[in-house]
Length: 211
Image (cartoon, rainbow, N blue to C red; front, side, top):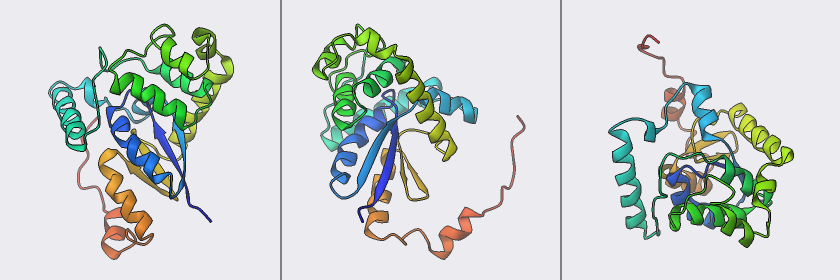
């Protein structure tokens, strides 16, 4: 039986865009379901700030993203502003069926072409390409909003703490940098079952900062 996995992502994440080609390629070996979620809700649940919300880390992250894109020869142009409100893009993805064609088209609109994607007007061109004439009505659908909330709740329920995350079996692989780990896991399902992996999974906390 073909293995199955779930790829949780948000269009706000350039790392998800960078991992997209790898996910499409892996889809030839395992069945991967792309699931859009609200990254802001994930951060709120865990009491965290996004990397683009921290001075210094923001600038480094952008350089790192551009360098990774250049090294991998993935065309990338940052949108006009970042971070941005990605709700409209997430809802459009679901309104268009939520499959890989919609996921890819919206990622390319925002991160390949460097276009804004925060409103119906800014997404109108990509929406038309996906067969949606009335973008505003599509992203305002109560059913679409409910599905996005359900997706996010499901991601939180399995322990997702960032995007992109691939859920494969009972393990979560977070970030574009984890792609080689996913490859290793597919090549050898027991690769992370060794003694040292079991030991660090139960490693005690030595100190906790006051909150």
